[in-house]
Amino acid sequence: MNQLSLLIILLAALVIPLAMARFKITFLPTAVVEIIVGVFLGPSVFNWITSSSTLDILQNVGVIFLLFLSGMEIDFSLFKRKNRELTPLEEKGKQHQAKYSVLAVAIIGYASIVVMSILMAYILNLTGLFSDIWLSAILFMTISLGIVIAGLKEKELLSKPFGQTILLIAALGEVVPMVGLTFYASAYSPHSKSLWLILLILVAAALLFWRFKAFFRFFDQINKSTTQVDIRLSFFMIVTLVTVAESVGAEGILGAFLAGIVIKLLEPHEETKVRLDSIGYGFFIPIFFIMSGVNLNLRELVSNPHTLLLIPVIFVGYLIAKALVFAALKMRFKTANAIAGTAMSATTITVVLAVLQVASHLHKITDQQSGAFLLSAVITCVVGPLVFNKLYSAEAEDLKKTTVHFIGTNLTTVPVAQQLAKGWYDVTMYTNNQHNYRAFNSEISITLLDSLDAEFMIDHGVFDADIVVFGQINSEKNYQLAKTAKKYGVRRVIVRFEDRNILDDRRDELDQLGVELYNTPDVNISMLRSLIEAPSTMRLMTSTESSVYEVALRNSRYADIQVRNIPFIDKITITQIYRDKRFIRPSGGTSLKLNDRIIFTSSKSEAPEVRRELGKLN
Image (tube, rainbow, N blue to C red):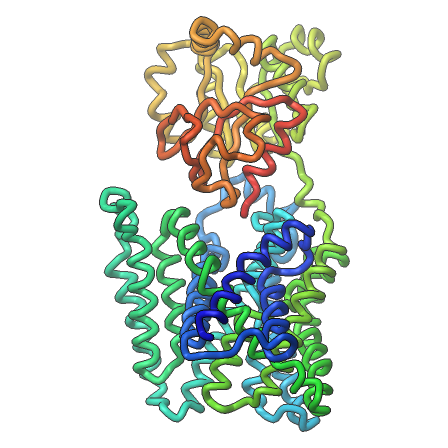
C-alpha cells in the first residue's frame, strides 16, 4: 500500500505540470495546484492515498529541502546600501530619482505587516477563535517568496525597482517569521534547552561558510560528472545544520534555511542552483505539497462550525495583515501597482506549511485549526496572483529608453544614430563643425556646440547619457574627453581611435577605465576578412531583413539545453558563444550555460522576441 500511494503521488507530480501547460493554467502557482490535487487524492474525496512512515519521511525531507531552497532565494545584496562615493553624473541623477529608495519602501512595508499581524493575532484571541497570539502573529506575517519570485519573473520585474521592492518585502516575509518561529519553538518545545544555545546554529553556519568560502573558486578544477561535488557539499550543509539545530532544541527547518543561506553566500555557479532545483522540485518538494493536501481533511473541516467560521476570518486576517503595504508602495509607485504589489505580498504558503508542521509537533494547534490556516493560505495564493496580473502595468521609470549621445557627425556615426533611433534608444548627436551640422541636420536632429571643451560639454549635459560615443577623427581629443566622461560617471564610453601610436600607448589605461575602442582600419580589415572567409557575411550585415544580434542568457529554462534543442532554433543561427572570457564556436550538441553571451543572426522581425525570451530573468 505504501508503494501504491507513493506511485500515485509521483504520477500526480508528473501529470500536474503537463496538464497546466496543456490547458494554459498560468494564474495558479504549481504548489497550490499540487495541494489541491492532494486534497482530492486524500480522505477528503477519493481516499486513494494514506499516510505511512515512508511518506512521512519523504514529506519531512521535502519541507527541509523547500526551506533550504528558500534560503538560497534570498539575495542579500538587495539589503546593502551603496556607501561608495557617487560620481557627478549619479549626484546629478539623484535630483530626478524617487524620494524613497527601494530599501526604505520595503522596510516600511514589512514593518507595517509585523504591526498588523500582531494586531490581528490579538483580535483572534479576543474573539476566542484562536488563543495563541504569537503563533497566529507569525503565521500572519509570512509571505511566500517562491510564489512572489515566480510572479515577478513572469512579468520580467526582478531587475526593476517595483519588482525589487516586492522581492525585498517577500524576503523579509520568510526571514523574520523563521526567526520568530525559532524563538517560539524554543520557548514551547518540551525538549527546549537554554535559549542561548540557539546561537550555536549561527556559529556552526559561520564556521561552515568560513571553511568553504573559497570552494567555488577551484570548483571547476575538481568537479566531474561522476562526483557532483557541489551537490555533495549542499547535502552536507543541510544535514550538518539540521543536526545542529535539532541538537540545541530548535527545529530542523531552521538549520535547512540557514544551510540555504550559507550556500547562497558561497556564490555557487548557476548550474549548481539549477541542479539543486531539479532535485528539490523534481522529487521531494512535490511530495511535500501533495501530502499537505492529503492531510487536509475537508470533510472534518466543514463539519465543524467553529472551523468553518475560522476559515474566512483567517483569510481576511491574511489580507488585513498586509493591507498597509499599499500605503508604503504608494510612496513611490502608482496606485494600481501599489494594489497589485499588496495583493502579491498577501500570498503565503511555504512558511505557513513549515510553521504549522512545527506547531503540530509541539501540540500547540489542532488539526482543524491547522487546516483552516492552510486552506486560507491556499486561497491567498489563488487571489493574490490573479489581482497582481490584472492590475500591474509598467512604471514610467521602467519605460525609460537608453540614452545615447554621439559627439561627432560623419558618414559612420550618422547612419548608426538613425538606425538606433528607430529602436529602444533616445539618440542625440552633437558637433561643433558648422559644415557637418548643415550637411547632416536634415537627416537627424543635431545640436551645434560652441566648444568641445570638457567643462562646457558637462555644463550643457552632453555627458548625461547611458552611452557616449566619441566619433571624431581627432584621437588625442577623443582620448581626453573619454577619460573625462568616465570620471564623470558615464556607464559606457565608446571611442574612435584612428591614430595607432596614441592607441598603442594608451590602450592599457583605457582598458582599465572600461573605455571601448574602435577604429576604421580594424573594422574594415575584420569586415574584408569575414567577406573572404564567409561570403554571406556582408550580405547579412547590409541586409534589410536580417542582422547580427547579441543577448546574455538569463532564462534558466534554456540552461543546459543543447543548441539543436532550442525551440526556436529554426529562426536563428548561433554563430558564437562568449563564455568565461573566451569565444566558443557552437555545434548542435553544444549546451548553453546561464550568463552565456550568445551572438546570433535572425530576421529583424523575429530577433526582438528571441532576445526577450533568452534574456528573461528567470
